Image (cartoon, rainbow, N blue to C red; front, side, top):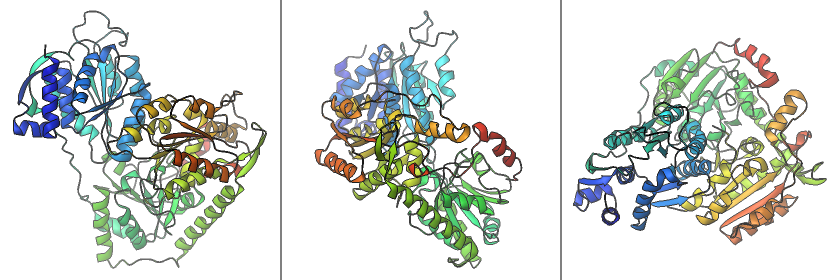
Length: 623
């Protein structure tokens, strides 16, 4: 058995050299080492650029934990133990999303791994690369392992996690280089990262073998160049259109300048997704805002009335695409995408399969070589879209100006969600602090209200709409190598999904504010039920919770009440900023049928009582 002192000397060599490859290069770390699989995994992940580990240890991960302990003692890695595996998955996802820093989620066997797998749905849905390291059943079938999947058969957990993404079981330690290579392809995909699930059987973790450390791979992302496609046909279709609508998804965030330039050349108006707010500054005249089933008046106007669609880095997600009914007048599509399936999503498409920035630059060059010039705003399509933007601005301003409404549950006037979100996001923007939105009513109202001037000012986890994401995400602010403040906007329902993040936030030095918008219900679903069937059911309760007292029970948290008017909320935010560290602000908010209480819905969606009408329209369309 490899002695801990040997591990420590290897860890110190890596720390002193500044990395595994550097230690191999200077000879302080031997190329061949007799080490355990657990240690080889950690060295392999260090070569992948992973230095942060987040998770919950159990009987299935004691050997791995011991290696991590020694490597942390040497200053090579940091491990952050938390209280829930779903939370761990969210923390690692938020860390990679906001800062680009990689992390690995570590769990034991069985229930812990299932929890982390559930939490990884957010990373899988939003395209965020995260390593997931789960303990697994022994390979020698000496009898049922406690907490394994109890249905019999071999490698059941590998089959289970493989449904979510790429996975590998280290049935033999010799497979580690190939496992890491496959993991790097998923986690470090240049356009759409994904979780990778590395399963460590309990009995192979401590197995000692003679490893060739130089054979452990390093990340090699391979971005695409400009698309090889028919640029002339694409340019001709855009020039021949009367009403170009440009749908910019998260894949367009690296091409902000190109989106703006091309929109001017083709008289196009840009519709964003919740994840691509800021691709054009909010006040840009060609920015119609978010479109979809929970879009904006102006964004949905552009979608409903465009005749040629240019898609840039967007997928046909149900709500953003109105269940494929979002473009009823479009007959021709130009699709710029890095995924083969996405680029061919619509019928009658000119596909441009390549990097958005490089491809748009070539398309712009083609348009200019054809004599294209900026279109201006004195044409019918521009005037109509600008009028729709003005209508949305008035609609939005009316709701934000209202500020408070009488709420029956609170038996008094309380702030509306749009008013609270407006106050908090503007406060955060003045301080250049990112805002993370949780799932539910807060999220839906949030991406309609935000006025992002650039990407990265707000993060909206709409891929999975995972309740509890924002509260968990704030822990990432403390574990990042370069710590950063963050504002987490969450509802009472989402907050109670992962409240243990308060404890972990203090433990790991989280910086920022959790604002809890409390309407005593799952407001998004209550609203949907009322909109479809006229009554809400089983989405609220009668239990009043003092969230300020709950937060104050955790030592180190500044627990505040946000009051009932914007000026009181502003004062609470300032108090939280002055206190530093982690703060929680509880804000009672309105729920009810008054249209001024929320931002409304303006599109279609293939759910509930709307299915028949939406499906009928879907099958009338050509694209």
